[in-house]
Length: 283
View 1: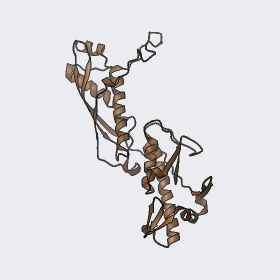
View 2 (view 1 turned 30 degrees about the horizontal axis):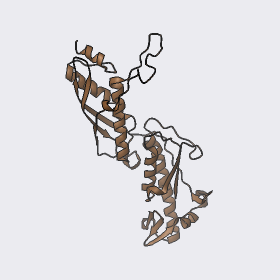
View 3 (view 1 turned 45 degrees about the vertical axis):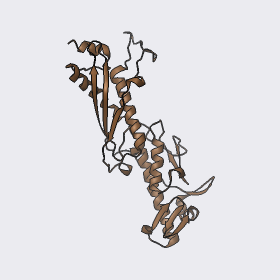
View 4 (view 1 turned 60 degrees about the horizontal axis):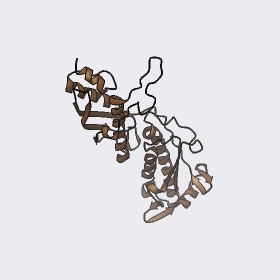
């Protein structure tokens, strides 16, 4: 029975799943009873944008605020109907549980003040709004380590081991967050070792297609061992921090450090391609 209107847009990082989880947790219901409409100004009038790691810590916090307000309204309605204190009311998937009696959503909605009710195609509903502008946000921390082997005859770099530690606060969805870390590391390896736009001296790209613009293949990407720090952030919903782009950040530096230890010379230019590493090995 719960419907979320979120201004932010989903682009594959799992924002919508996490926002639905936030509402399900706040309303003590099942995830299957939560639906979400996003990226639509008819659903939410304004959003700061789906960028800068804002999906959970900004949009998610706004959703959390709206869910807490809605919970408060439903609990107040249950106290009015039952005559009991708010501490005696527990929300459940079918309404509000007071002692052994479940007060259904129809009765709860009818008992909510009219200013918080709204007519819809499916009947009256209670509406609550949450706003978060992202003025106060914590920073995620990421550490990357590599073990590499460098072929000094060809300059080829082989990644033998990849380990990543991330501080995402309370990890809202471990599988999705794991995927973000693995994807960030893979993208970082691409920019650190392979990807380069080459120009002809007049500004015309010499690498206009993926056949010439080298991106990592599956065989180039190692399995990354991912470890999440057990922390909780007081600013984020349920103690969560952002993750998004941050796993990308330490990858190139960690690879450069590993290559320096292998050949004795530090690379300062990316991508650390075979020709550049071959030349460094001869300095």
